[in-house]
Length: 97
Image (cartoon, rainbow, N blue to C red; front, side):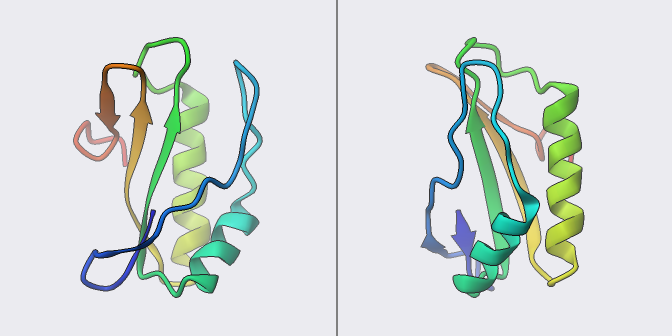
């Protein structure tokens, strides 16, 4: 989700698709999209088909990588949500941001 300076949603966009166990995410493309939408902040999300909302080390690393890349262009990452069929985990609420 791309948000304006008042945290209102500008646009939601599915950026990448993967397999059952992994997805390639390109920080450059996320930065380009944030600039295209003139976003002040973003909320990231992805699904875990396994049904577990527990973030992997790769999830945590990707979050930090995207935060660093977006910070270079003054876009804040407010949260990273992990979605399953019946549950959503907020990495921000868990202190993983």
